[in-house]
Length: 64
Ligand code: SF4
Image (cartoon, rainbow, N blue to C red; front, side, top):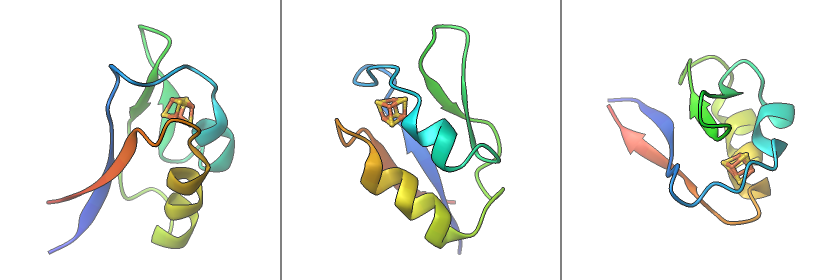
């Protein structure tokens, strides 16, 4: 089992910090909110830093 990050787009405030922290994983989508486009695109440690840096804590791990 592995896991990928998931963004609750209802809560995202479009600050772009996660995109800056892990651009291989997150990008700003059509609604100008963050989306995961490559959930395994960076080491988990790097993704975790992006998760921890989200000011509204709207990124979570999801098992896949
Ligand atoms: S860090 Fe959080 S609030 Fe900021 S763009 Fe990413 S998901 Fe949205």
